Image (cartoon, rainbow, N blue to C red; front, side):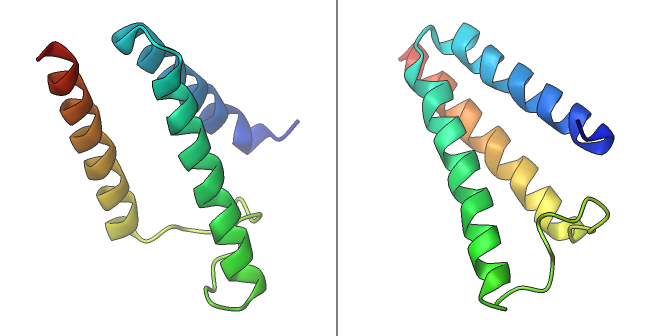
Length: 88
């Protein structure tokens, strides 16, 4: 039980649940979960290989603001794209 990990996991679980509700298929949240886990695995690998300086295990590690903004923008873009694809 990590106190600082509770809310990110809560929001991620809610997000995956809403993906299921919005698209009425289990495959969209499965794909989102896969990419989330793949990204985490990639970050751990790059840290172990000394390619990045930010330790993914360290809760106090600050993500650069541009990286967080890019992530939010990409998620919003792909959700909108999936939603318009679904309605066509």
